Image 1 (tube, rainbow over the protein chains, first blue to last red):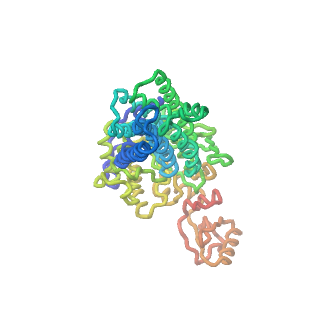
Image 2: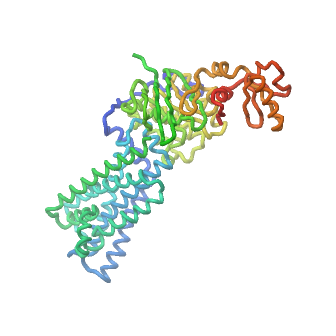
Image 3: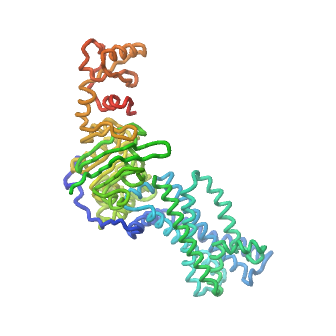
Length: 277
Length: 298
């Protein structure tokens, strides 16, 4: 287009300087561009997110921690029950702030808002789009996942240096669940089918993660199954960050990292199928 | 070596049993505004999606701005601006943020400057901090156009740019597109509005059943396929049937046109096929389309 003035009187744009766009995969400019959209949207609802991230663990701790401790249990696995639940709640916060937003967000942006159609008309490919989406969700979940821990510190849990690793544990776990959520969001034909995923996957994972009761009280088969629950691994890592790491913790972290990579690739594959005809 | 801005050769795209694009050959030279005119289901939107690599052809070759698709889709998309049929703005963020996001996606070096340009193009500088859901339909459409043009693209794809808009907003959008044309932009515009194609396009390609059935300037297409004049006759069904029979017996092409019948090439009638009460109007692209395909545009 050559410079000039159009009939409407609007100024004609002179040449605009753009960075070169190559055919390379996973360009940071594309990923950060998509994330900037997420940040702009998040600015419109961050207060409600921060509110629920703070108040929800507080309610759980008051209802379950203090309530149960006063009437049924005093400690679990040798820990004060409030501290036991509080450290476990980190995993709950992570799954609900990663899998659910990824499922619903992916579905709504694809089916109702046509957001992905707009983004993919720009120099962004599906792999970059998915990577940006799940990275952003995982960063958010990594941040908000720490809130229950902070609330529990308010309930007397002693801070420990190992806790500095909790955002990283939350981030990596949330990457896996965000990838899972995006894959589901790209796969279901109707939004009500998320109910199946919530009932059959998310709720069991969340209940049998060792958040509210120790896993070693369960039957042998359930204990073995729980070892395959990524949320249980996160719960263990968070508790160990507060009360002392164990030699198996690097393995737990590696498993979460492996899950994150597998779910990322699954999400890219499902989203490509969904978005490219 | 110079390339056309868009080159499609033998492109086929199927969706299950449906062939949406059926051996499409299309070239759009630089600096031309080509209107892709056809009814719903003709394959226009699929063609647009093929050009952004959001649909992958089953066979054939596609080159955009000299780059082969889908392999080099990203650099090709960086140099094109797409204005979609559907409003896909982020409604809860501000007008400026909508532009800012796409300035980043298009790798514009000076984002702030690009946002100012976009706001000026959309004539929304005074609404920069308002959320999109507070804008009128016309403002949103202008913002959508500005978002697709803010990176000064070499090629502009407009997919049904005024579909569903009221006449006043449509006129606003046409004025913006006119501005782009006058600056020499290369534009491919899909539409099913005859008036839009006639008013804005340098050339029109008529598309039906996934392929181009005719192409040329609106005037040349009309002269070649529909003559100079069309006679429209109004009346009760029995009379229309009678008029149709007489005109067809005289070798004229007749089609239904809502409550009337339209006799194409009326200036060639010699034996009283055109009733005295017929309304004579200049032949249109719709007459061409019906003459070539037997189908109406809307």
